[in-house]
Length: 168
Image 1 (spheres, helix red, strand yellow):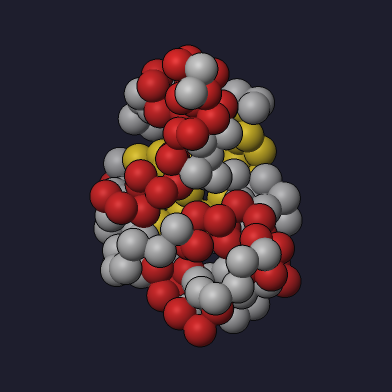
Image 2: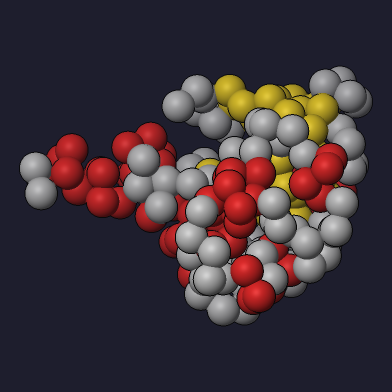
């Protein structure tokens, strides 16, 4: 996995729940590509038409609240999102994103959230903890991502991480 991610910002507010990320009527779908066709449909019906591989979701507090559906990070990842930058995450979404190796959940401060605008082109240097806003020619710091979290994501999820480290 590359350490510097580049894409456009798709910005949302607080309390984006899992039903907004992937509506419940699609939970019987097992094909990740089919799930991706409905990513963010509950809050932004045009999301899949706008998103490009490598883009970012930027959100306020409590991103991924609601039910514990694993489908939410899968739908986002297969829609092209590599990382979600949010003021805070619902604990179960955070774990599902990491454990499945689907997304990098990155916590940002209020000030960073306020400075990022929908459509901004940004680069996120995960290892250095820096966002470079190419649109505004600004730099912002992000909270460090724990080393273990990055190892799990790089391995492709918790099961692959266990296999690589424990031979399970």
